[in-house]
Length: 516
Image (cartoon, rainbow, N blue to C red; front, side, top):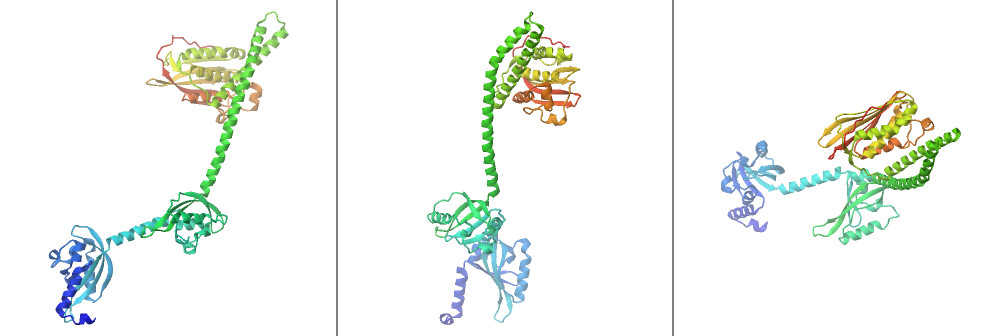
């Protein structure tokens, strides 16, 4: 104070003025009517107004409308002789920008001790406030994360611990901050943390990885770790942040999925071997069986055979043909399972196809004395494009079943045009019988392989239970639908819808007559 005591009043005034002008803070004085009396360069820099623009003007020029009541409160406090320190608020710059400031306001007295106004020191804290807001937002994000977010120094001492970490490991922040992160590492993994620290010190990137950690209750959990270095002010590594995700359930599901995938591959390989075996055996049997059928047909047509021998020849022929049909179904099914069925589209007459199916089933129909009728929608063109072989096979299977499971009554085959759009024709086929019908339980699983109404059906009527499964596979391949409507002991209606194309070259017209 010695040197200051020797300064004259004018020198002291000059020194104070110099200090005020050199301050980076805004230093402003005002009277009790809020009129600005002085305005330093710091005020010019912060608010954008010059001293000439503000001296003699109201300080409320700087105050946003919704905060004007603040000035009345400040004046009231000054009149009570109170000082306002570090009051954070918002003010408006000349360019309209709102800025955050910290205000310190002190009362000013004249020589007689009378209050004449106040002096204000205003500091721009916009960047500081933004930093604080950013930190608050970041802290909120970290705290709301379901993942564990942990920071540690290069001695493995935990610095921060969020709620997610508490949920995962069971420890609170109070229990873990200041403790070594190695508390969480199983004892059989002593080298993991030292290796991580060595990589961090060298500035090496640590790729996300999966490992095992210990909960407070001793439970081992699978976790995924993402580790990033934390840098100091000079760019040096001072620690690391860790994001920890509990993947115990995910890993269990993944392991189960891997097991299922392996089992599926085994099943697929077994299925392929089975299909290959069925195909090979069927081909091996078909060749000699074809010879047996040929010989049986010759014997059956021999007129001079004794009656007993004729009966044997007929029985051999019927059994051989039945076995041949079974082999064909097995071969078709093995192709379907192996994905080796290729559709062959060509122009054909649907009416001719239905006539052929009727001719093939007519002998069995005649034996049973059933009525057989068919009708084709006249709107269906004489020639359409599709896989005629598969359509014939599906219709033959459905019609053969209808006759097989009907002891009296009739079988009705129909084909109707459901929709014609551009070059596509959607045709619905129906095969209706008056046979034994089906229960609801049977209908639900009817199109699965090897399924028949009940075990007695196989004993009474024979068959492999593959026909409908094969039919469904063909319909699916052609982009269609198949289904059934049936009641026990009241008969069934099997239907399927398949899209066809319009033929480019018409097939010669053939009329279809109802067959009875």
